[in-house]
Image (tube, rainbow, N blue to C red; front, side):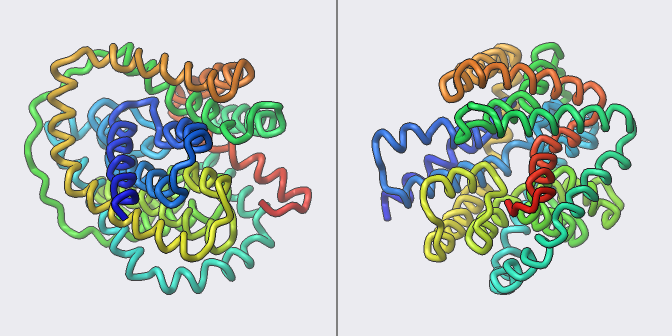
Length: 394
């Protein structure tokens, strides 16, 4: 038990780090840690605790760079719309508090509805899988038609989709193939943007009080369910689809916090109930061993504990984060991050992985310039559509 607790706490610490530093995702830590797991053979359940804790803690902290500096990754791209504007008004901590409350309320809702979810997820997926190709086409078309620049969106979808198909059919180590893909599409643009921009923040008001936001939490919960069940449908696309349910920017921020946390929890449920991996963490877990009911319940318990620990520490972390950024050249931190991503990609995927990283970085940077980051999720949607089109179930 002490071993599991220590692994969880260590995972939360790494999740805080990956959340605060743009370009380092929780999936990066998960994939980098896997060779060490195979080499030193720690307890499987302890390592599972570490993976779950990293993933959950990341969802609570990764809004800080997005809200205060506009350095968004895939999951926080939409929060970069109202977040920096509120931070420029001295309301950054208020915006951040909204995302945190969304995540915590979602965990509570998940626990309340867990018995129902365990009953309905498998038959629901069985029904949806028959029409999955058309569902994926619908969501991809929705992302394109909801974009402000349709030509740019179609171009990014085509390039990202082709990148996904080629990567998953290449000789690169498929256990780590997502690492250079996601690092290039979502991390590299944030790093470049952060290095080139001067960061000047006004003094932030200490207003951290938030009320219960039912529309925001409900939207995030439904979006997380969609992202957890449907292959390639990330939180940005699913939240965009359900966004008509909310009207205010506060509700939008709550929804974004809710969907990221819900996505992780639902990906564990999907792995248990239908045997499908819908997140980087679940991909790693599925690769390690067959996933059974007892492990799923244990993992959900660890995730709830990690969420509670993150909720307890997150605002202290936020205040220290602002102090550190104010006292250091943030560009230096981001430069070191970029070199780390490059080195890790080469270590895990070799020269071919570097080529994938450079290609995905160019696509991601173009998408960032055109404001079409969510269209990059075609890197997963198009390969999934290809499988379903040939009659295979993924």
